[in-house]
Structure formats: C-alpha cells, structure tokens
Image (cartoon, rainbow, N blue to C red; front, side, top):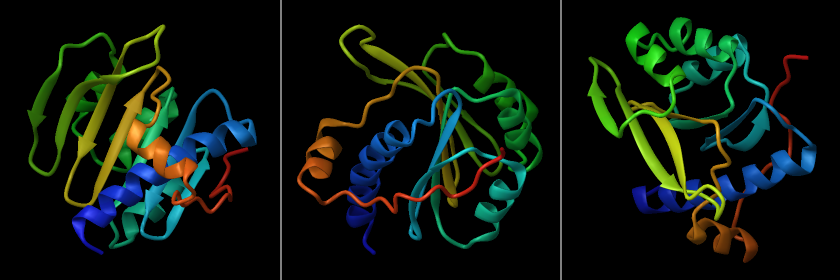
Length: 164
C-alpha cells in the first residue's frame, strides 16, 4: 500500500473509530487502534500492547484520557524513556519535539471544537508505530469526516479486547 493510501486510510478510519466508540458507549479512558489489519476501539491492557508490538505492521494507537495503568504500559511495555512518559502525563505544555534513540516525543496542538479551539496532543512516533495521547475531544479532520460520511471509512465494528 502506498504512503498516500495509508494516510487516507488512517484519516478515514479514525473518524469511524471515534464514531464507533460513541456508538458502543465506551467513555472515560478509551483506546483506538488502526493497523493494516483493520481498526477498533478497546480498553488497552498489557497483553494487547505486547500483541501489537509483536506484529511487523505499523499501527496507530490513540489514547483518550489515559489512566496511570496506560502510562505504566507506555513505560514498561513500549519501553519509552521515563522522562518522555512523565512529559506525556503533564498537559498545558508548549509545542515541542524531543528526540530519543528509537522514538520521537512530540507535543502538538490541533483544531478542536468551537468551545475548545485548540486540543493538546502528545505523540510518540517511531518507524513501527504512532501513539497519540489527548484529554480533550479530538475530532477527526474535515477531510476524514467527509470520507467517512461518503462511505469510504473502514471500521471492523468489533471490540478488540477488554480489561473488564
């Protein structure tokens, strides 16, 4: 799959994932995964993180309102540097890029809804995955919303796993 097609799939599927989380009534701390195997909404646990890392496929893991357990998984299973994980727990930061040996930690701001025009997003990026963390509603881009409403979005509609 070309890089352009992968980006288009990511953008269109993310809209479907966000909609599916709402449809399934998964609130609080949720996780969405997008890979070449499809997409889904789940509760993240250690076993799921290990399974994702065991594949040779690139994946995007999006954490909405992560818990302390999620940060432990980032530290212990993903092996992120403790200072980077500590930074990812603290919001109200300035935009920045911190380069580590095998990943980059990025703090960016994206467009939010009218009542919250900027959404802070923390990103761990490597050649194998993208992990994004946010606390505020992080709506999909207009491009992905259009793709989803036109029927080109992909979502398996299944829950990948559950911790409870």
